[in-house]
Amino acid sequence: MELHRHSEHLFWFDLQPNGVPGFITIYIWLDEKNAIIETGPACALERLMEGIAATGLTPEDVDWVLPTHIHLDHFGAGGHLLRELPNARALVHPKAQKHVIDPQRLWEGSRVFLGEIAELYGEPLPVPRDSVAAVEDGDVVDLGATQLRALHTPGHAPHHVAWVADREVFVGDALGLWYPELDCAFPVTPPRYDHALALKSLDALAALDAEWLHYTHFGPRPAAGGAAIAQVRDEFETWMALVADGVSAGEDAVATTARLLAARPRLAQTELAMGPHQTGTHLGSVRGMRGWFDAQS
Image (tube, rainbow, N blue to C red; front, side, top):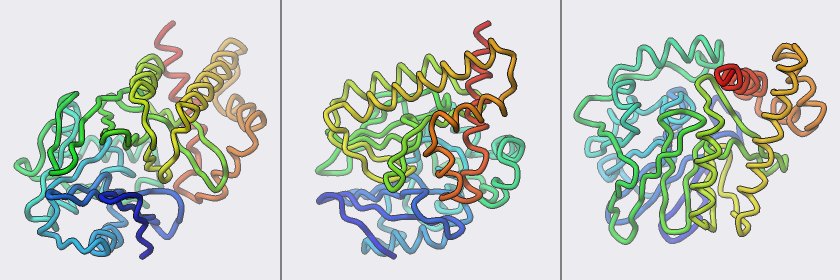
């Protein structure tokens, strides 16, 4: 287990679900109270526990589990993990709370959208009702020397939350995905994607003037004085323009995705590099954007 120390309080490691490196980052904040940010999927629970132990924490030492949202690659292990952490509670968006207490609809929907990838991730377990609470926009988690503030950032999902610590932000999928080894950043827009809300969330994140953007996919990214979020916004707008052109031309999502991959050659590399976990993501994102575009008609 290679554990990276980002700052005095913040550590991170590569979860490597199903042996795939460079795909999911787990962040651990050590303070008077200790927090795990994201859990990853159920299939990687053993490695998740190894990462927690590598920081010197025991299961009893963890106070908070703070996912950015409850998709399987972000909180699929939540119910499993909380059974291992006797003193921990999870905080989720109010719209997500009932779906982690009873994850059946979440699991069924994930199997429809993700297909065999959902099976690779593993089925989520229910989170005990007394182990999870809803977090409102602006709520603060006091860890001691640090306060983590919840910032509702819908768009990718209606229940998405970014976590803000001074000038560091845990962005989940609100800024899409970023793979530093491939020098590639791009949107991920599943069903129920809302482009207008996504852009508002980008603006809210940009207004924070952060120094670091902590991606789940993948790793800490320098904000570069706002240049990183500006690049993300341009990419979101480029994708939506391509999708809009495809709709106007009467082409299907597969054809639009082919044009997208031709215009953005590094995108194809992400599916090769990340194996089955990334397969079909770009097609799914085009379909998510088309769904939003069609809903505006």
